[in-house]
Length: 434
Ligand SMILES: *[C@@H]1O[C@H](CO)[C@@H](O)[C@H](O)[C@H]1NC(C)=O
Ligand SMILES: *[C@@H]1O[C@H](CO)[C@@H](O)[C@H](O)[C@H]1NC(C)=O
Ligand SMILES: *[C@@H]1O[C@H](CO)[C@@H](O)[C@H](O)[C@H]1NC(C)=O
Ligand SMILES: *[C@@H]1O[C@H](CO)[C@@H](O)[C@H](O)[C@H]1NC(C)=O
Ligand SMILES: *[C@@H]1O[C@H](CO)[C@@H](O)[C@H](O)[C@H]1NC(C)=O
Ligand SMILES: *[C@@H]1O[C@H](CO)[C@@H](O)[C@H](O)[C@H]1NC(C)=O
Ligand SMILES: *[C@@H]1O[C@H](CO)[C@@H](O)[C@H](O)[C@H]1NC(C)=O
Ligand SMILES: *[C@@H]1O[C@H](CO)[C@@H](O)[C@H](O)[C@H]1NC(C)=O
Ligand SMILES: *[C@@H]1O[C@H](CO)[C@@H](O)[C@H](O)[C@H]1NC(C)=O
Ligand SMILES: *[C@@H]1O[C@H](CO)[C@@H](O)[C@H](O)[C@H]1NC(C)=O
Ligand SMILES: *[C@@H]1O[C@H](CO)[C@@H](O)[C@H](O)[C@H]1NC(C)=O
Image (cartoon, rainbow, N blue to C red; front, side):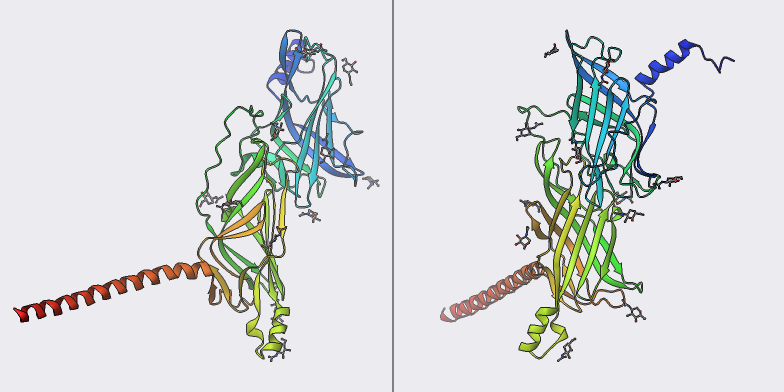
C-alpha cells in the first residue's frame, strides 16, 4: 500500500533532491519520418545568474525528467537549416544544441539557453519577467561522423554568465541508424585538450603562457596494402603538426605544436599507378592525408630528349590536407587546410626517400608539418620492404659536417707533422754550425 501511494512529503523531498543533486539522464530523439538523426542521453544542471532588486542571484536547476523535445523547433536539418535539438521544460525554459558537420567530423556548433524569469519558483525576486535567450558557439564537443560523443566526466559550457554542466552524456547527430553508434569519443578527456573555457579573461590580465613545446614525436610505421594484401606504400616517420587557430579561451590566434602519437593514430590509404594516398586519423579530432604523385608526363618529355625510359620516373609528395578539431577552437571550429601543389619528398621510382633530419613542410599559413626520421616509398614496393634510399639534402649536409671535421683534423695532423719535421731539420742544421 505505502509503496503504491508514497506520502507526499517523500515525493517533495525527492523532487527537491532531484533539483539540487540527482540530475537524471533523460533521453531525447529528433526524427525525420521513421529515422532518428539526433539522439541524446544526458543529465544537465544549469546555473543561471539573474538580476534581483538587491543585486545578482544564482538559480540552480537540473534538467527534469519531464523535459521533452520541442518538435516544432527541432529538426534534422535541410539545405537551409542545420540539425537542431531543442528541449523544453517548465514554463518556457529551453536548452538547444545546434550541429554542424564537414562530412568527416560533426560538432555542437552552438548551445542556446532560454529561461523565463516570470517563473518565480525558480527565480525568486527577479526584477524582470522577461524570457532571456543566451547563445554560445564555444561548446567544444566534436566527434567523427558515425561515432557517439560520450563523456563520463562532466563538461561545463559557459554561456553568457550562466553555466550548463553535462554529466554522463551520450550524444550523436547525423546518425547512420536509429541507435547510437557503438564507437565513442570524448574531447573533454583527450590529451590535446586545453581546460574547458573559463570565463573571459579580463583585458588587464597577463596573457596565459604559451604551451610547452613537445619533444620530438615518436616514429610511426604505416603500411598501406593493395587488394592482394601486399604492401604498396610504406612510411616510417615521426610527425609534428605546427598549426595556428583561433583559441576560445585565449581569444586570439594560437600557435600549437602537436605530436602525432602513433598508438593513437589509425591509417588507411590507396595505391594507384600514378598516385597514392595515406590517410592518418585520430578518432574524432584529426585527419591528415598525404598524396604522392608519379610524374609520368615529365617522363615522356625526358624520353624524347634522352632515349632512356623508366628509370627516370620521379615521384613526390604533391598534396597534404588536414582537417582537425580541437576543443578550444573557436567557430567554425574545424581547421581545414590543404595544398595540392606541393613538391616535397622527391625521389626516383623504384627507390625510397629518406630524411633522418627534421624537415619542415610548409602547407599553408595556418599549417606546416614537421617530419622526423622519415622514410617513405609510395610506389613500386616489392616484398614489403623499402628499396634503397635517396637521402634528402639536409642529411647530406649533416654528413658533410663529420667529413669537414675529419678533413680539418687530418689537415691539423699534417701541419703538426710538417712543423715537427721542419723543426727537426732546423735543429740538426743548428748543431752542425756549432
Ligand atoms: C514508418 O514505420 C511504419 C511502421 O513501422 C510504416 O508503416 C511507415 O510506412 C513508415 N514510414 C516511413 C516514412 O518510412
Ligand atoms: C513565462 O512564465 C509565465 C508565468 O509562469 C507564463 O505565463 C508565460 O507564458 C511564460 N512565457 C513563456 C514564453 O512560456
Ligand atoms: C547554431 O548553429 C547552426 C549551425 O551552424 C546555425 O545554423 C544556427 O543559426 C546557429 N544558431 C544560433 C542561434 O546561432
Ligand atoms: C534589474 O536590476 C539590474 C541591476 O541590478 C538593472 O541593471 C536592470 O535594469 C533591472 N531591470 C529592471 C527591469 O528593473
Ligand atoms: C557513416 O555510416 C553510413 C552507414 O553505415 C555510411 O553510409 C557513411 O559513409 C558513413 N560515413 C562516414 C563518414 O564514415
Ligand atoms: C593481384 O594478384 C593478381 C594475380 O596474382 C595479379 O594479376 C594482379 O595484378 C595483382 N594486383 C595488384 C594490385 O597487385
Ligand atoms: C611553426 O610555425 C610558425 C609560423 O609558421 C613558425 O614561426 C615556427 O617557427 C614554427 N615552429 C616549428 C617548431 O616548426
Ligand atoms: C576578443 O578580442 C577582440 C579583439 O581582439 C575583442 O574585440 C573582443 O571583445 C574579445 N572577446 C572577448 C570575449 O574577450
Ligand atoms: C601510447 O604511447 C605512449 C608513449 O609511448 C604511452 O604513454 C601510452 O600509454 C600509449 N597509449 C596506449 C593507449 O597504448
Ligand atoms: C618507354 O615506356 C613506354 C611505356 O611504358 C614504352 O611504350 C616504350 O616502349 C618505352 N621506351 C623505351 C625506349 O624503353
Ligand atoms: C601551396 O604550396 C605552394 C608550395 O609550397 C605554395 O607556393 C602555395 O602558396 C601554397 N598554397 C597555399 C594556398 O597556401
